[in-house]
Image 1: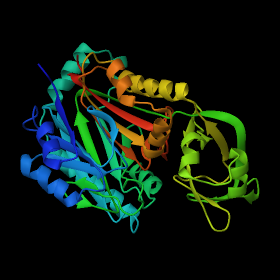
Image 2 (image 1 turned 45 degrees about the horizontal axis):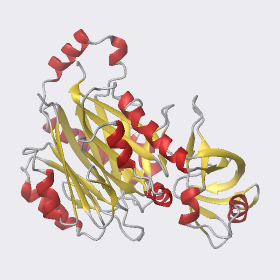
Image 3 (image 1 turned 180 degrees about the vertical axis):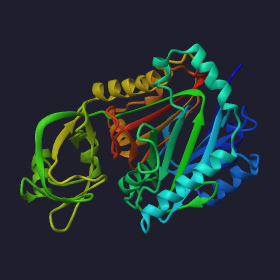
Image 4 (image 1 turned 45 degrees about the vertical axis):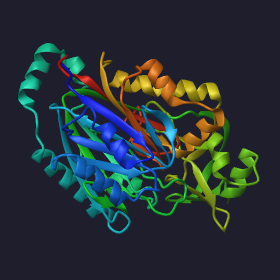
Length: 410
């Protein structure tokens, strides 16, 4: 007997995508949608709402490309996943006015998500816990994730780090956080979020309480070179000086380019080594040059850190994605049956895939299986924890969330 039902629709027509997503899932707990900026978000939300029960939660975001089990990535389309399970509780909390009052927006999202989670209880928690403790060793249960915080943030207000800093004050340090920032097809004008309504300059926090096996992993396709520079003057996402010289001049010299552009940074980018025990390199992508010779990045760059030039190639790109995918499955406890996969893929990583002609879906189907429902989108940044547990906002990564069709006591 299936513990989880998930179905996907993907089309350039909203109604067709909804009908496909609801073909095998009649009473979903939640509907997730990722859609091109060409669609009116209010129409997307109202149409989905008209097809589902009033108690179904609806979340989503505008994108820089849509992903599903029907296609690796398409633009100008809408992808939809419907999920139904008696073993999932969902809570949705929206925090508004991120750019004006980040503390209030964070608290608003957490409080509302918690209230919604309590209202939407569907399962008898104590019975499953008792069974899990009887059937599983304590060692196995230590890795069990009972709560997942899935984030969708406005991708243009630059408040991801501030939101994560405030969020960490409201949730336990070990709680899983995964998500992505909304896009608008590289127009960089306005992004939209859906959280039982339509919002901008906001965050949609989806709290998932489940006794299904779940796992997450974050990975990027770059390796460090011996080239880099010390960040000698920076504030927030702007680096003014590298090695006490104008940042743009130093970066151009390091990358042997005469211009700072998206195309350049899809293949060659920069990273900072994490200070936790694993010392992973996390990608912090440059965005554009300022008038005074500084460089604006897609993520915060701490003053005093060392910015390392990162490179990649086709083989490494493929192997790292396969590893991230397998790490997420391993994190879920190596379940025999998977129910759904959600992917937050950086828009710059998408450009890199296009450069090499790499199709992630090919590897998902070959490693995981042909029939696993998949949904995702190309983001303007990704949120998650490093292997050492550091919570952050990163670039050019793939964040993968897998949900098994198995209970934690199986």
